[in-house]
Length: 155
Image 1 (cartoon, helix red, strand yellow):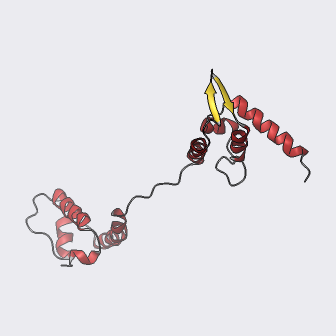
Image 2 (cartoon, rainbow, N blue to C red):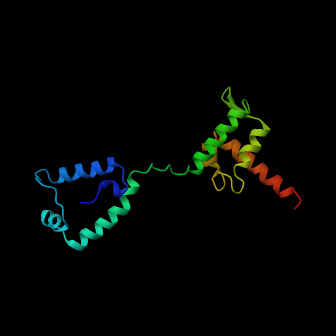
Image 3 (tube, helix red, strand yellow):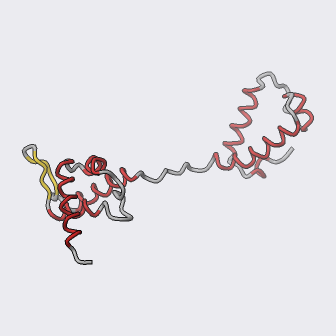
């Protein structure tokens, strides 16, 4: 029988596999040592068993890896970016008396999120308003004014 440490798997994974075998075969008196004994015990097909064994050998090392966090969605990126901006520029935007107030710097920052390569690129005005906390009507007004100003600029 192969030394489990040669499989380069954490012993916890090997322990879990061994427990699984015992769960699948609770009355197993002797652990099968040869391929013939495994096939006799399980009634499995030799070629299929070998194919699954190859796939398991590829898969098992990945089980012990730390799961990778998926990249944040554009919505989450915008929320994170706006939060960072507000933390470093306190008072640049606020709700006061039921009205949203923002500085010009905040307005330019929000509009900059829609530029190519920025997290808000391609977002609808409604999505951007939701992600930034800027009221939709106000954001649409900012976007209209920015588009008009861009048209007037010489190229």
